[in-house]
Amino acid sequence: MAAQLPGVTQILRARLRPIATLTQLLGQSRMHPDSIQRRHLGLAVLGSWRYCALTCAPRQVWEHWVTVSALERITDPLKSGKRVIVLNSHYGLGHIANVALAREGIDTVSLLTQNRLDSTYGVSTTGSGEPLHFIELGRGAFQLQGLARAREALEQGRVLHLAGDGGRGGNPMTLPFLHGTRDLRGGFASLALLTGAEVIPVFSTLEPSGRVQIEFEPALARPDAKLEQREAIATMVRAYGKRLEARWRRDPSQVLADQIRQYLDTLE
Image (tube, rainbow, N blue to C red):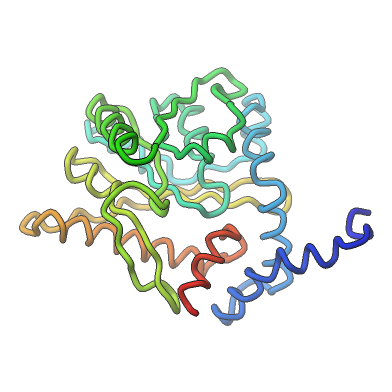
């Protein structure tokens, strides 16, 4: 019914133009371009609502709609006394990883920018009562305060959850990415090297059915101890960039529109 309203077709075409361009650039995919566009539009329209609905849902509802894979990649290092950084991205429903960890009883704190905090609509507990903890990553001196608090959380044995592809976090780097470039920050790598933490990427996919697939990947390799700090940070950032690039190729429908536009700007 909404699609029949005046002007809606034009709005949808404009909204889907970036993902259509990205799909053409990536070439052959296991998914049909129409399917990619439908999945992408569903994420754009329903992503924030789905995050809040699943966060507030009772445990049995959460378990019905959410599948968590390879959680042992988090729990095993914790059992052995290691510190852990969980690295999500602006891909799919990535920031729901903190909810999954909280529901598993894992003491987690998320380092988020104000706009991402706003997108949680003030949700501070899960539907089964587990608390959600956040640190705001501000700007300037306030950014440094946020990073200092994140380091303290790691040193206290808490899991730190943050985005590896955000626009803040220190140590900016421009890397080759697909057919263009991508700016990534090395804040997560600095924290990992300072605290000895394992860095474990996580990717969360929102399916058209409303189901969410959360997958914890193997930890990023530790840089050679002989490398100076700047090169060690760069090594970890490049490794994460490769993981992110692989996800874009695997399922471009989960790439957020603003991320696509930023990438396409590097091609001009």
